[in-house]
Amino acid sequence: MRSTKLMLLTLVFCLVLSGTAMAQTHITFWHAMSGELGNAIDHLTAEFNAQNPDIVVESIYQGRYGDLNTKLVASLSARTTPTIAQVYENWTDAFFRHGVIAPLSHYMDLSDEEFNNYIEVFRGMNTWDGELYTIPYNKSNWVLFYNADLIPNPPTTVEEFLQISKDITAQTNGATKGFGIRPTLELFHAFLYVNGGDFLDEDLGVTFNSAEGVEALELMIGMLDDGSALLIDGYENEAFGDNMIAMYIGSSAGMPHVENSVGDKFQFSTAPIPAGVRPGAPFMGTNIALFDSATEEEKAAAGKFVKFITNTDNTVYFAIKTGYLPVTYSGLNSPEYQQFLVDNPHKAAVANLDAFKYGYWQPTVAAWEEARSAIGQAVEKVFLGEPIDLVLDEAQMLVEEAIEDMLSQRY
Image (tube, rainbow, N blue to C red):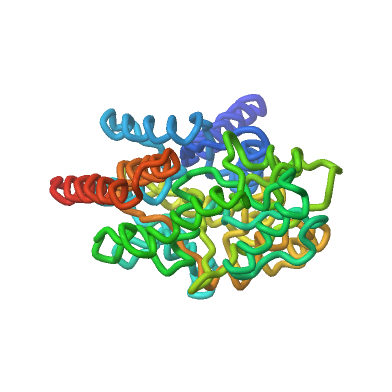
């Protein structure tokens, strides 16, 4: 009798365990984070899974961002999309236009306080049709890296920046140029924006082919012509670490590379990009999108997971481990992150609170991949000696064609 009761109890217990396992909601998170970045997200994923036994999150590395995008597009055709994935804003725009993503914030049970805790500039980068569709995750900004041994007081204006570049070059007899220039779209955007310009207006009209755009390119070319800047072939941090240049503008996400290049050769620090007619702080990085093919249970689980990995403690953990920024005000202002900045003063400008007030970003439209390629090639052509006006005219035509093609598609 006892044996029969024991068998029955065991059977019931097994059924309960089986039911619990069957009740688990499984979601997938596709990302492009390897190395220390991948280790950080794997750690947070394991923490979430341990705290939420009814949910299993599988974080899956899909290669670099280009690989990730290719696989996401392929998954849409094959109807094998992940639950959530890292995305750039222009990817989001394409997915939004095709109606294949859902507004992630709707599944996160955010209070007004929690919603507004996401940094405003990041909310702007993630809003479509008035809704916070995607959630900011690994965000960086562009800052001025400078040799603090040669430049005790970094420039705050473009005029000061140009003068210091000339002074450093003269003081070192040209052994160290004041500034390092790599002809990229991002550097052009930095000078274009502080000069009062931008790539596109709110109606998707081309605005970089303007007096502001011409002046930005002339400034860059002019620094090479007067010898105060060095044309960089490769990454700027290497020339910076070798004392070939005293300043350059680059992504805060490159901080570990700068630290490795500089070592103990000299002291370096960071400062906001020098202001022109207006200040400017370009922000970049990816966000997390929720695909609409997920079930309601999977969407709710995804919302809970994303809320977890971007809460105050975890956005600070990720920022400290990876060099990216906390994505919330509470994270930026947390005692742990503020102490981290005190302990690493060369990183202070990366989290300059004033910069968040005048932050900007690249266009978020689906056509941006083609448009940025056209503008980037235009910048390179200028540095190869082609006339600025003709190059910008050609780039404008190509960008307008890309936007027109995007707008003419049926979604």
